[in-house]
Length: 257
Image (cartoon, rainbow, N blue to C red):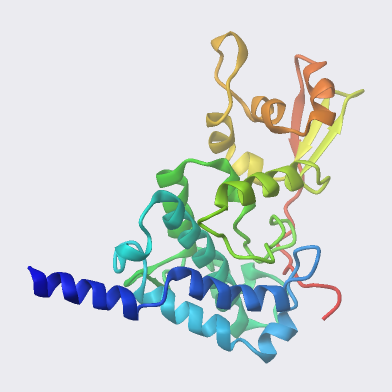
């Protein structure tokens, strides 16, 4: 028993904390993600050593393989967010230059199980589904970036377990004030939304309450979470027509490299 405890303590001491790896990844994000959340792919192509190192770490580390590094739900969610974003960058890079992730793997970039995470082969879709089912927080959709123009902006920092809730709240506030994602026309009673609110409508509705006991909708989510400035407009109408903006799968390439 004493020998086992000594070995575990020795392993914990010798293994860098997850945050050390996140810090290294963040160096790359600060260098290659522009102020609008697009990616300087040419810059990343020139130097991706830290990204490669992080992806190598992901393959052998995770809540299943190294549980001591991920002691709570927040740590596990931060791990998956950082993994998803890093694997998108790493997965696109060998195919760059390309003008769309949908031209990679015959359009199956997100479904192809070509990534290794926590000791197992997986796909980006599987990672996203694991986050949705295990954590049930619609703000996850604001934290992961699919490498496309209509995706939420790529974060210039890593998901940090110590302040993840604040990071997600900030991301939500930014998205809901961004007309690429939400457009309100009070006179016409129309709300135009990014397609993520259509594809994952159940995730957003599940976090809201509907009056009179009716099933909650995306509009109920917006009424609860839009910045205060917009809430009187939303509350002023009982009925809104919701339409969805065309999704642009073009590569999220920064204009300046």
